[in-house]
Image (cartoon, rainbow, N blue to C red; front, top):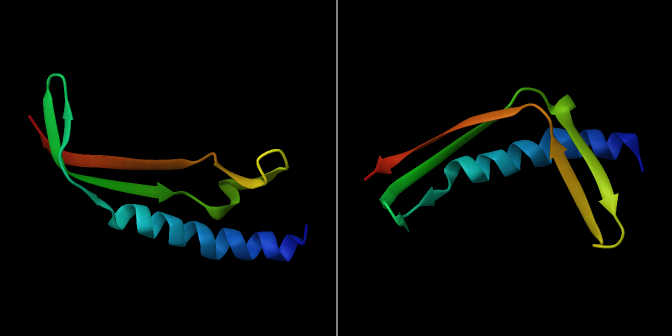
Length: 78
């Protein structure tokens, strides 16, 4: 695998994925004890160096692992 390609993926794809997740707004989620609505997820990646890629031939997929990611989940809980 081309190392420059992996670096480009880390520098472009991961921020794009996090931007999309952080922009996602979830509606009401009901559970046995009540519900939560207006769920807002904010994820932060400390550094792109904490992102690793592996290939899974059985699934024909790229597996992305982030070892230093944090975040918050906000919402109205009832």
